[in-house]
Amino acid sequence: MITRRSLFAGGASVGIAAALGAAAPVRAAVRRVPLSDVFQLGVASGEPTPDGVVLWTRLAMDPLAPDGLGGMPDRPVPVEWQLAKDDGFRHVVRRGVELAGPQAAHSVHVEVDHLDPGAEYFYRFRVGTEISPAGRTLTAPAAGTASRALNLAFTSCADWQTGWFTAYRRMAEDHPDLIAFLGDYYYEYGDYKYPVRDQAGGECFDLAGYRLRQAQHKSDPDLQQAHAVAPWVVVWDDHDIENAWAGDVPEQPDPPFLPRRAAAFQAYYENMPLRRAQRPDGWSLKLYRSLRWGSVANLHMLDTRQYRDLYACTGTSTTVGPDCTQRLDPNRTIMGKEQEAWLFDELRHSSATWDVIGQQVFMMEMDWVNGEQKGYSNEGWDGYVGSRDRLAATIDEAKRNAVVLTGDVHSHWAGELKRDYQDPASKPVAVELVTTSITSAGNGLDEYPNTRQLLAENPHVKFFNGRRGYVNAKISQKEIKVDFRSLAVVTQPHSPAYTSGSFVIEPGNPTLNPA
Image 1 (cartoon, helix red, strand yellow):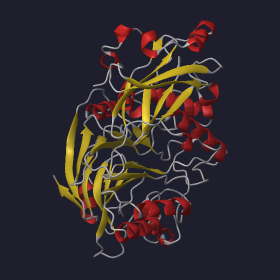
Image 2: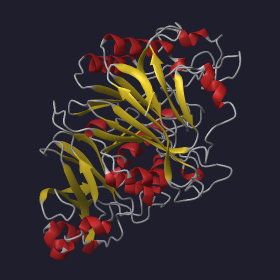
Image 3: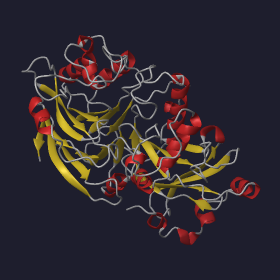
Image 4: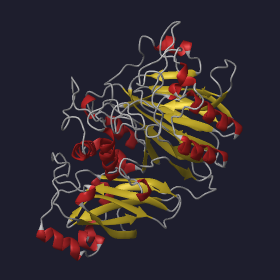
């Protein structure tokens, strides 16, 4: 476990000033306007490449200040940073100073480059005499490197009101190399009927509200532990902005959506370890991108919200029946033409053993209604069958070993993506692994009354568990070993995690094999 004590072990004896070096501008700033306890939101890293990584922090003396600015003064604050080869910071390899200003809620995004590939580093920040908690990060292996597996953890859907974030701490204790978060980092609403924990503020509509909600989540010690243990790669889903939004169309017409989306995008960038390439331009933010882990895996992160067509038939995210033929329209898209062309080009030119696709909503076909009646999610890829068919065909024709990572549905699922669900004899072309939530929907159950019939009526779906948690995937040239990690309770803190299902996926065989 990474702790402030362990990461500073051995380094404190040289003294704070000697360890970090002189910084007259910081001392002057502290004398002018005293700052205290500014690292209450922790630290994070993300977006690893073979030679670089992003280091993040956001200063806040009062994280729950109603204006969303964390109780910070209305001026820039110099923030020193260090990157070291050791957790005692005896071997510092890079250092610098960044200005954290009020226009970005005093957040810092340091893009460090010219690092060693496949290497472990430790980092920390300083303002005046205050030193942040330290974090651990990694760079990706060099292109063509096949020797190192990727220990990937992924999860989604963290609702502060409905439970404790213990799953984040259990994930950190598994010591992953990389954490992928697949959407709904927080929930924008604030009127949950039976809260386990009280939410700060009401529903998020403006920049102050989204900043405040982000700060409340970042103040959680279990989430801070997960951010400090490994680099993250993130995408959003609907609740990061507004429930069930689709492209430029919100679920509710008031307030005006595009200004609200711009505010949410700005707060999202400020609070995530993202690169300048992901900086928002008003209500636009290009979040889809690929990360490469040597020759073992390419990780393609998708945005299935910003560019999608409106929901089929009803215009809403409700379940639709087989009479909704609009969902079968081959021209409909959940990714948008530009993102789709980018992804297909990435797949066709990939030389990694695995192509891992991180995205938000159920991709496999799923009849969610028991019995003879049919019901399909208009919000998932069942509402955009043309997009799914084109992706499945590209995976098949490019002969890629593809694995889809999915969030959103607040339960663990696993199954197989078929080339064509209209053909009962169609072959699988990829495996889909669906993670449960961190807390959303409360404790859940191991199995719901209709689960067995759902699985029987959807035979390409092989696994279900309804508790909260995350997924660990050890990705190597030989195989992907998958463990679905579950927690029995999130309405009380400190619950242990257990493995509710384990599977192996082999190259050239897009099926789930029990481990």
